[in-house]
Image (cartoon, rainbow, N blue to C red; front, side, top):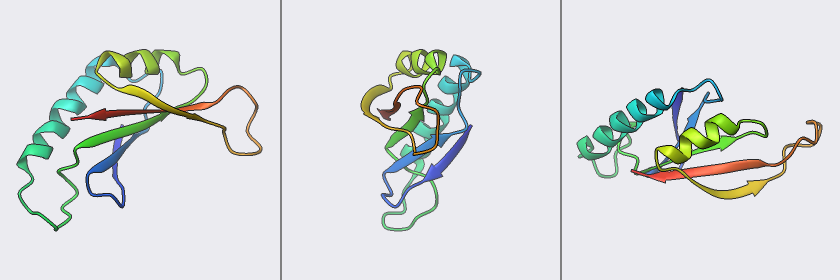
Length: 99
């Protein structure tokens, strides 16, 4: 599981998650990221921490991941097509959580 900053300093992406990402691992990450949010004191200076929202993308077939994300408070907010060339197995789903 990896955290990636975005150009919006309040938003981060959680990547390298899948059906094998445990509920416990997600809960631990949320606790850590919430602590980082409240520990940020440098307004206008990017330290890599302090984001207030997390998003991740769930691929078709990642039903366990989707259920685990929902269990820790993520909401499904958008569906979109996979890139051209990928098998047509269904849409990607964006999940987001405010810390």
